[in-house]
Length: 245
Length: 289
Image (tube, rainbow over all chains, first blue to last red; front, side, top):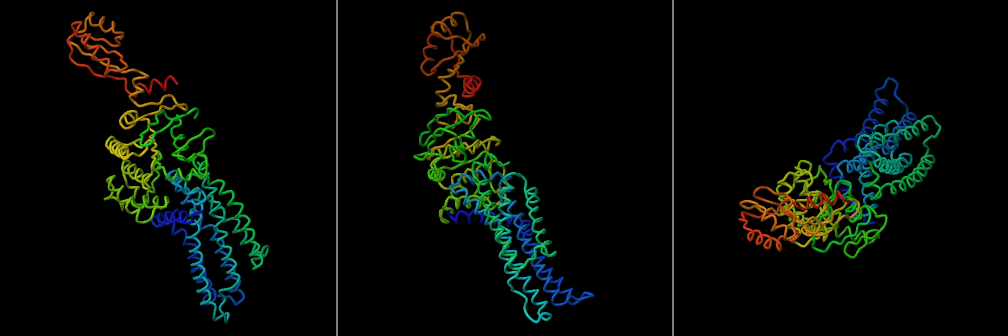
């Protein structure tokens, strides 16, 4: 596999995204909200609420808030990956692309890079803001800097796996849909299992301890491998030209 | 598609004609290694379609213009070509040279920074042609390159194809525009899921339908009709001062016919070839098949 080819495919997508600011805004909105608004909410709860939260509650809230980075990692790539693949279908630009010497794998890998990179940069940038602001707001209460810690570390380790799952699912979805909005809506359903995980964590059914998060990471790896096989089987020249609707 | 066997020579412009659904696009996709054939063999240069390693080499040596041009509307004309240059592994310097060359050649240099989505159909088609040529391919597959274009844009594209022909590019042209095929193709094949006929437009016209000539005289009387019939020709359409006959080789046969008419007292005004175009041949063959 020639990675330069894959990078060229991704670079083309990035150039198009630059002309479509809504795609970029959709990718950075949630990480910015989690990274800035959530710490501000906690800060309000610490200092200005009628019943200010204590140290233990603050730690619990920070852990709960940080799970949204995982949820975000799962749903944000939907906007970009849908546009990247279904957008090409709509513009009918896949046929000339497939006539180039690049292999199907190189093109698919390029699409995965373009689907992953912006959401992950946004997630990690948001998490840096989140950790910085949270530490700033809670240091006087806790007497130490809460972040970085292993908990958010494992969450951020799981984030690329959740994003990859989202992109792979979008490749499969894109083969059956011919408009970007429908692909985004269907891809957005991926939110449900992650919201379910969040609720399971909050209700204590599947608490997001470090060990449970590592089990989740293992499960995501397995699902990703299975989805990659399915995406690879879907993303074949002949399949795209004859079966994709 | 079934039973299609043909050979396209290097430097030739080969027209592939057929009604909608005849299999023209399927053929071009198979030859461009986009879809696989169920049986048979197709070779581009010395490489076989269907063999993975050969297909990579074939894709490198061909340029492909699909029926739907599939440009990136948001990107500029320059960027559209630049990314394809990258896909073909051209260096930055080579891309720069090629892009400038083709955009100038196609009259799009002044619009190089304009988004392709704002272009007219003709400009898009020209840009897509430039994209197909960016890596200097030996063989060019063009699928309906002038479909839905206005006459002026069609002419520009045709002239560009003729220029490529003069540069000895091998061009495989899918079209249902018979006039276009007649103007630019060295040879044509008529397809209707099966290959109906192959040859130069000239050969097809003469061998399959003959050619029709109209002879106009001061007046046509019985002695002239008899003289023409005596030579073995049947008069197809007759008026008081003209008639039409079918001849196989007008260049050879006309002088004899005209001499005989003059001998019979006919006073010749003019002789012209009528009807019997590639279109007649095409319609006849497609109807019969």
